[in-house]
Length: 226
Image 1 (cartoon, helix red, strand yellow):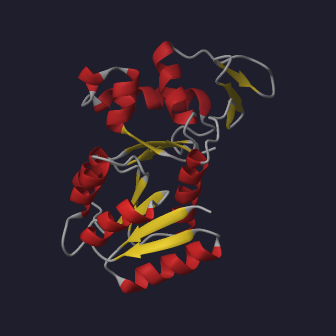
Image 2: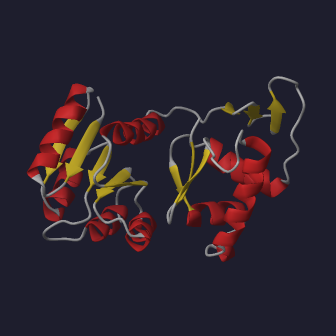
């Protein structure tokens, strides 16, 4: 059973999350502030953490930084802070995903399932479907499933697509993608991402202006949704 540590100073949110997660066979541990959260993380050994940023004693971003000095546990931030700077700070500190309050419970549960799949040691998918196209990560090919025609991707387009497809449902930050595809000296060149994602959408999305699979999370990064 997956153990989830929920950190929030609002009792009604703790209660709602406890009820919903327990009903879906998660084991739930709760904490109402940053000090309790760090103590629970050290003693309860959660498999993942759902963390609010606006805690009464220690700011949530600082909690993430402290956790990251000794623990790789996945962290999903659930916060009322909607500004891009807050999201970037949390993600750069080591959070794995970010959901803005008020949140849809189904969306949060989907994010939890995505992290849980990764925790379970599930291998990255060998293939993925994007609209009419089949992406084969082993053969490094993209094929029209109806006609069998191959879609040509540049090396950079392929590296970017592969980074997203290997992590279905997970938010990949701009910094992570830039460092993975272009290298550490390109960590702030966000225009590269916009340019190449636009090219991938034109080649693969049924409607590039309204993408369904290669999604932008404003101010944070990108996500592949099967």
